[in-house]
Length: 262
Image 1 (cartoon, rainbow, N blue to C red):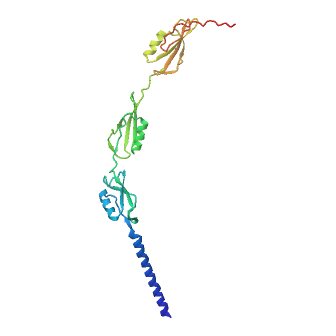
Image 2 (cartoon, one colour):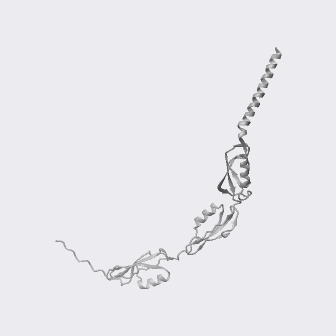
Image 3 (cartoon, one colour):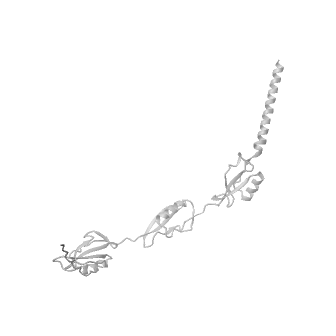
């Protein structure tokens, strides 16, 4: 009885071993036999990688996009779409996609000629550079005039760059004088000598006031005024006439004829 049980146990163990070995064999033959550990192509040249993948029956696809890398030489593989090693299997006939190195990233200070201050700061951020100082100089030229370090200088990431920016010249500021009761032919030359322009002159009839006397002005007395601001005056005249921007009066406008209705 005991011998029978022992024989059965031995037979069962033998079947288990045979079944397990058979399963492992067929798994290796059908699955692992058709799959290979993904090769490590990082750092290899395209020729080396292509020879290796051809031996394994795998296609190699080289993308046009390149990546900067401090250690991988230019033209060598810097990235592959499949993780290399025995933990990642690849089947024969499949494709490995790779990208090549463009060498270390070389940063250069860009040419800011004619670029506005805002655009210059945007370019610094895009190149991983930072603004250190931004100084302004009054001049008629527009945009950024110079950079420190100068353009095309090779710099490292986050290097500080200072910009010299053109700023419009500020006009000379005055306090508007009181022109009322002053003769225009005397006031105008004094104003123009200081860069102030009397652009509009209007003539109005004003009893009791001598011809050519200023009776109204704009801006008003005491207001801030600069060489960019136009001045306007109204000047007395016995007869009201039209005006021009140059201040030359037109001929008197005759009164319109009376219109009667039947």
